[in-house]
Image: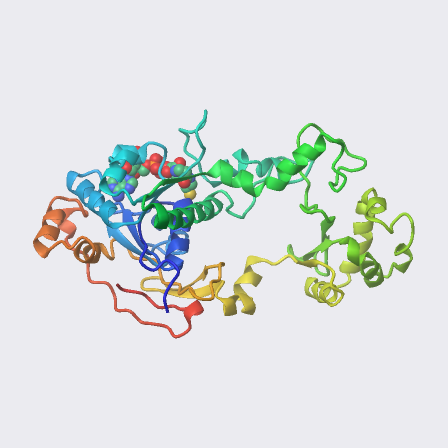
Length: 444
Ligand SMILES: CC(C)(COP(=O)(O)OP(=O)(O)OC[C@H]1O[C@@H](n2cnc3c(N)ncnc32)[C@H](O)[C@@H]1OP(=O)(O)O)[C@@H](O)C(=O)NCCC(=O)NCCS
């Protein structure tokens, strides 16, 4: 079956998380992603947070599915020349190095355009133009700079960063969308363009509702926040704890077993249209028409005591029993799921959102598959490449270099230390019949 991005070739000059997350999406959609890595070490994450000695870390394997790897020392003259040849043959270049690195490598925008006017050059940086544009940035710095940390946590505690990688993978997602838009525009203009995403901007985009609240604050207290009605509002949006980010009040409530299970909780939303059903479920029918409770406005000043009362009910059931009752009554809410529970969730396995991937060295491991489902372009998740696994294949099949030229490049140290010599042939492909749960290894 064809894939959405069949025929698109990506020069993947990314590392760590944000850039690799972007190119992994492109690869999942069928682009031929060629990851250029430094000989010897490769992407630094190959060796970070290793659970098994001398085996590519899960950090790397889970962000680099469906790609090919070429080792190239882009600081050697011969390596630079190969890089430029790859620029000529690719549609998209993606990089997320520190500001200035790409220019130092020789790939200024002018040079890229001279080599390939159709090239889409996509970059992630920490900040856009301005006083911070030269800074190096990692995930949590972006969360702090983009409004997430200042609005996450509890009012009486410090700012908190979230476990969701909104700075890194969030920026990668934004960049992938920009690349796909630029590819589409190229079909009519014939020209490439620059696509840039700043991590600060991505996080701020994901914190859009907090900028909404910042402006509402000028017109009075934020009545759905836990600070209302007794707390104090300053001049900036405060941390709202677990209060709902939408227009319906919500809270995290204890369920049976909470004393020993840190995740025995449920998220409960007091959605106005189902107020009568909520009252019925928790056995407080007298609240349905009571003037102190009957309308959302009347409830706003009493939310804490309302949630306390609901919690008396949720604590008598497991979080899954609570979910079943809420679903039966069409009341929005759901259990807090641990990663252990998610990893074992059959429905996520069935859709390919959690996949088992067979890696040639580490063996079977779990990964998050493509969360974006295209009916005409199903994702086959393939193990991440070994360092330099496709070096010779890419030089031969894409750049059409002959055996002698490849040997010259080895001898010049462009592909790695000459003593290393050509890497061993890649393992044979073993295809899987189940596309969304594939554990096969693709060799092109
Ligand atoms: C993530 C980040 C902080 C890491 O910083 P770092 O580890 O110091 O790496 P840098 O990006 O500064 O530099 C990479 C260096 O490796 C070199 N390099 C990379 N690939 C190479 C290759 N194949 N061969 C030779 N050299 C290579 C680069 O040329 C550069 O060298 P230089 O600084 O001498 O010019 C930084 O890259 C960054 O801020 N990126 C933008 C924001 C971002 O994406 N952050 C999130 C990452 S998840």
